[in-house]
Amino acid sequence: MKKTIKYAVILAAVFILCYTVPVYAIDDMWTLANKIIVDVYNKIAGISTVLAALMTTVCVVGMKLSNNQQKVDQSVDWLKRIWISWAIINGIGAFLAYVKPLLDGFSTITV
Image (cartoon, rainbow, N blue to C red; front, side):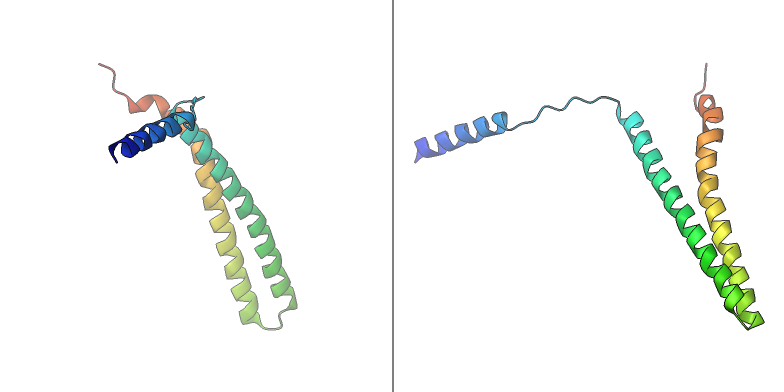
């Protein structure tokens, strides 16, 4: 019984050593995290732009086909909400792209 356990442990250690994949990092963690955040944000901004255009089309068609002034006013309100939301989402990206590099040096205190 002891021999079987001993061989099982040795076999498990050999399998662990054989199937371990070495990992070589290209960048440090912060550079990689920044790349991931930028990539995800670009996808979100692209999707939001397409959806804003689509919903604008729906609102404009709704305004043109409506025979009631209340429905037209509701479409205009929705149109405002859509474009304000789009401006906020893309404004975050503009802030990160243009203002953040200007503030990079202010996070450290020199003595």
